[in-house]
Length: 216
Ligand SMILES: Cc1cc2nc3c(=O)[nH]c(=O)nc-3n(C[C@H](O)[C@H](O)[C@H](O)COP(=O)(O)O)c2cc1C
Image 1: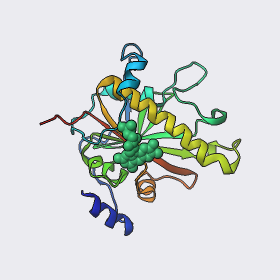
Image 2: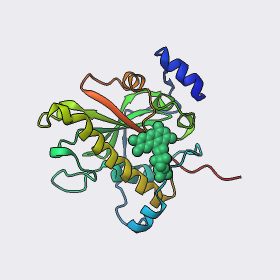
Image 3: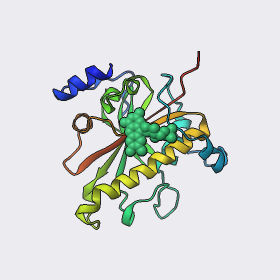
């Protein structure tokens, strides 16, 4: 769907998901992430960039596993994560929009849990590439977990935490030859509706990830 159509539908509150493609499994167990290898950090930083040209090919589960672990997985036995959060509130949930459904990443179990049995990739942003790229991530802050953070700071602290997760994804993508772009130009009410979010949950950002489109 092109951007103008999405904008028009968005104004009318009509930007909606498509039926799911394939099996909307209620949960997806991710294989253990490979925590070795990848590019040296400085090389990954040298390659980090935004890209908006994606091939539609599905990301295999081992790659998805590594990507989600890098994004916001558990990296310590005390429950610590790969990205920081103010007062360790861990208020960000990472939602994963796949053709087969939308899932919430459960870092403790390293699993995906189905939240919507529909293909809501096109709802995750106004830009047309989000519809066909194999995966769009959505970063959502749960304000109910931020009780110790002053109310006036919650949104900015949560946005900083989401930014750290997004950069983890950028570095994983740079290291793995994937394309990615973080996006703020999104229809937040449409995403919240499609994901069935509560009033405590705030959609912050979205991020598309996939293989780069092959050049001519
Ligand atoms: C908070 C934030 C919001 C952004 N929103 C969008 C967006 O909606 N769409 C998009 O294509 N790029 C978006 N970007 C990506 C920027 O356009 C991109 O990072 C910038 O042009 C620099 O390019 P680089 O990432 O390759 O260094 C966003 C970046 C940030 C940090």
